[in-house]
Image (cartoon, rainbow, N blue to C red; front, side):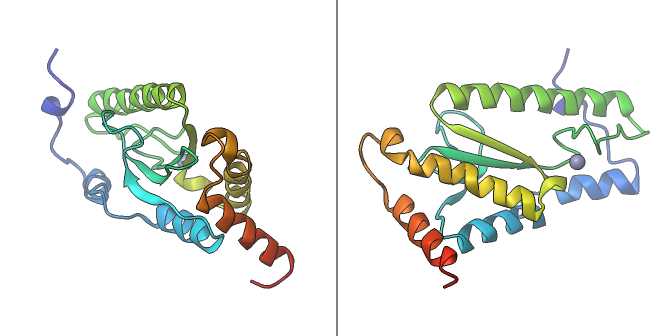
Length: 173
Ligand SMILES: [Zn+2]
């Protein structure tokens, strides 16, 4: 069978067209929220980077030193169980397309994990203050064990984060 892409229908409804246009790789609002939160918490990271150069899979936020990658998944394109509904037009194509995306995400997760990465996926609808705190503590746990990740090298990132946490506990920031 020919590739999903080659069978792509034309944007047939205003809704679908909007979704397709929104998927142009521009920084989306949920990503912005996550990035500025992490930055405020003293964490430094790269954005839109492939954790593994040879793997065609860029993460929204990457902390290379501690091997953490974060994906903020759009509810439509990644097939969120809560919010994804197959569009009424060209429904067969869309169902197949989104299912293929899901399979690709799972496969990439597996490859990244196998290569020592901590993979964190958040749905765009999940970006709440609670989720952000949970995210920070996941990264924090990883940073604290940084000497294991980095062979005894306690990286600058860990130092930054720990200083920031102390300041924030002391009400300084
Ligand atoms: Zn959702």
